[in-house]
Image 1 (cartoon, one colour):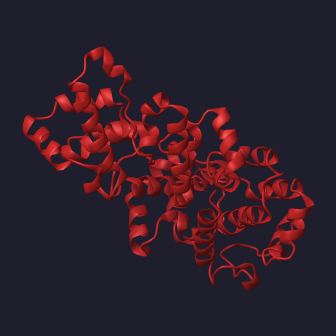
Image 2: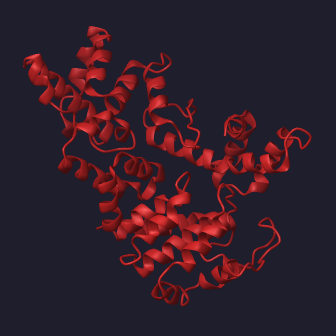
Image 3: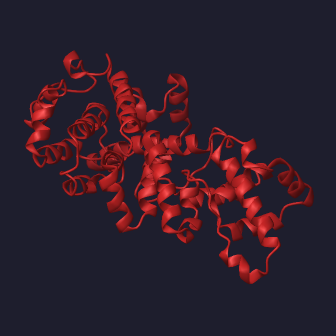
Length: 367
């Protein structure tokens, strides 16, 4: 993972993304794979290792782009991120680095602190700020009604909590809880552990809805749940939860998780999960996991009603060929028969339109 991350951060990668105006994970491999092949000579890297490193590039690109999207309103286009060994962004460590970074302006750092840090830690950060800046914050962040974004509203909530605490004895402050609006940032805030069941449930519902367009946020949401909460949300929102398991690093748990809810998985839910695996992963040649094996396991363990339903849809032809190990093209750089590209004329367009379709299905079918 460290090698793959170092390669992804090379200037040549940024140049490719700039040239095509597209994140690397959405580009065909023939647009970028040669960059890494040159930097991984066969004399130094065994073939298996080379393939594993190159396979990790797409998930890294996906993670970094999603992190930037979550913070794009107040962070620069290029920023340093810390990664975990499982290939996901270490959001809390990265946030603390940014909060302490003097290259960012004080307001950006303080807004980040209000999202990621417990209110007590934000209080300490506040005390280090100049009085003139404190006055500026109090004057700007007067009311949630004045702001449209959750992160700005959370600054108002911190300010109101801070002022309430100034009026109470220290011992009474323990009963005052910071209740941020649920976002990909506040999901990392330890304050969530202090919220009551109703507040946690309300936040998780809102976040899962928003995760239709943000897989890492959905994953963070699952991580912050306890086992009982995860089971409850899996049964009330099976599609929203299961699709998260089709992305790094949760794929190994996908089939086992699905096996627990076959009784409530709708035929359409089953169909759209197949679309994600085939159109967004297998055809687009994401090699960070064995998606063909995953597809086969999911298919053969599914109820007959689901298989009968899919047999009447356009995706069944290519699904059958994959399940039966029939070769439909020698290479994804070769011409794929048009009937297999259900959503668009090219691999990229096909995957892009499939993403929109499966995201829209989640929005339409919210409970």
